[in-house]
Picture 1 (cartoon, one colour):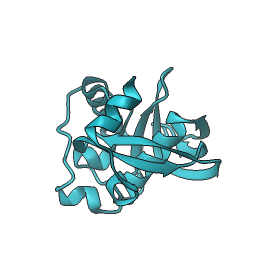
Picture 2 (cartoon, rainbow, N blue to C red):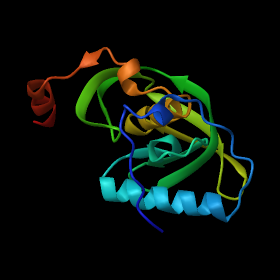
Picture 3 (cartoon, rainbow, N blue to C red):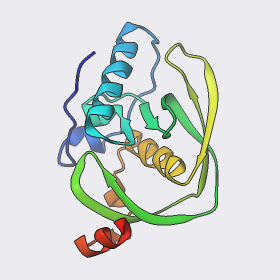
Length: 158
């Protein structure tokens, strides 16, 4: 396993649509393992393959209980609405006000190609939507209402 460099928002790879994963082999497993290590090291809650320069439909999401691997994920269902602060490992030091669904359900494949469904509310739903956006070349800065000020961020932490 190894840490991967996280690309910043100026990198062209982050603005491209990713290709579907076709081979569920050792290369995919290495990518997933490296992404897991990189996510943990960066204290993030989600990481998409394009953020480490790989244009494939692969995402990790930390639910707080486990880190789930989503290969070729599809958004199946959403419900409700939440508006809140959102950041990104590829946009360091900045946060925006973003509207996302309160609930989201996704369908994805695991590292061996088996299909399964995962669902979540609040931060997990936000993370599903944020990371799946990455796979289509969309950053939160493109869907946010506005950047949050330092004062607003500090008030949220209190």
